[in-house]
Length: 208
Picture (cartoon, rainbow, N blue to C red):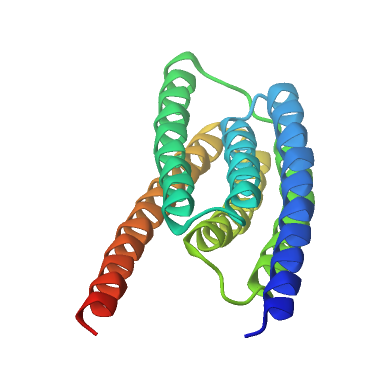
């Protein structure tokens, strides 16, 4: 691959990451506003999720011109942030379960539908990129998690409308946290594997 191809590839990745970064900032703000208005744990959970995504995309932008070690560090930060976020959502769900809540089903459905389109767009743009490093693979994992979570909110919002109960909202909120836990562990494992692969390459070069 020529130096020109590498430059074009980096430019494409940078452009894609800027697009998905601002899309996630916008969606996160929407989730927080609708979550507060609609008293919804699942919407707030997705707001936090998209906020963490925006941080990941910002780190990915910084990592494009950095070393492989720096990229792994950024990916690990993303993974740990997902784990922390998941614990916070679970604690909020427990609080709402004990104190009670009245989620608005229509707001859940509307916001999840809009977010689903945006997240699908982000996933499509990230999937188009070639030669993704560990940090870009982490960004793709985040977008996939978001898209799956939006489907869960749509189901929960429908059940809330029919039953008037808050448990579907809490269940999806905890489910989003579970997806975040899985995604965080996957990212950390990927970074760990990447580290071993780099050491193997270095050792191989030394033996030649």
